[in-house]
Amino acid sequence: MPERSDALSAEERKAIRVRAAELKKREDGDAAVRAIIGDMTPDEQEIALRIHDAILERVPQLQPKPRYGQPAYYRDGKVVCFFMAASKYGTTSCTFGFDDATLVQDGGVWPSAYGITTLDDEDEARLLALVERAVG
Image 1 (cartoon, rainbow, N blue to C red):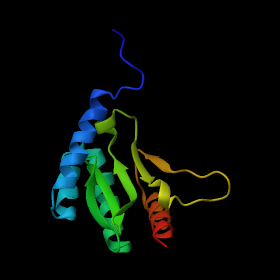
Image 2: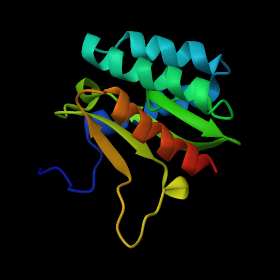
Image 3: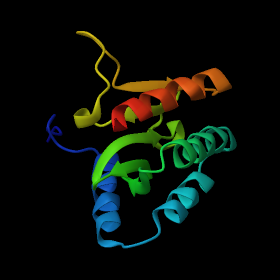
Image 4: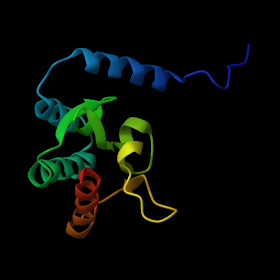
């Protein structure tokens, strides 16, 4: 019997189970996010930790918490932005994105997520400026 096209993949089912477990836990968000980052590849760790530390320093109103087993940053219980490791999703680059409700709109077309393979000072500043703008 062929698999239905609208059925969830094994990875998607696993992500849902991970998210359900996250919602049940009441843990220190910073420690939980740092533990997730510690399980990433060395290159991903470097990028994720740099973004994490920059957000905590420059946008302290955001609280780090896991979301689908990846770092996310919340304000008033809602996701503002998130990081996704390439190795977790089998992609060629890590992703830093914004929740739909906090998108930084710029005209009629704007990105909701950015692919990241390296992160220099200029790129970090660009991302953090967008995070600050999303927070308001």
